[in-house]
Amino acid sequence: METVKGIGGLFFRSKDPSSLSRWYQDMLGVKMVPETYEEASWMQEAGPTVFAPFSTDTDYFGRDSQMWMINFRVDNLAAMVAQLRDAGIEVELDEQVYPNGRFASLKDPEGNPIQLWEPAG
Image: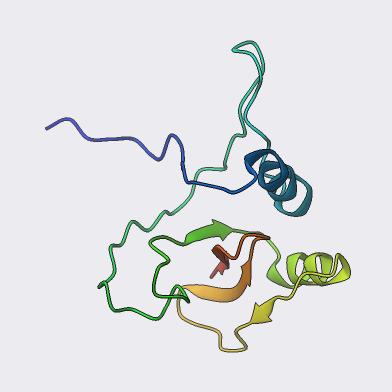
């Protein structure tokens, strides 16, 4: 059986795509979409990826109308949280350490939920 090899893109609606793309680049290091085919796209590091549909009545993503949430892996959650807070971004750090690592939550400027994950080990 042929299988997919990973996520090739995440596409979602935005009130101001240019500004939001710049925010993701400036705050999280997610490179903006190249303007030409000669430029390189953002390259994520290989690692675990969870693909998990949730029940429509979950409150895990925040508001009821929210249909998705992205989770970014990080090497140093404490440093990333400090960096975001220094930039004036509200970040909720989950103090619990889970068997699979540590987590923090924030929202982008349009209110989309983002989860940061520092994998265990």
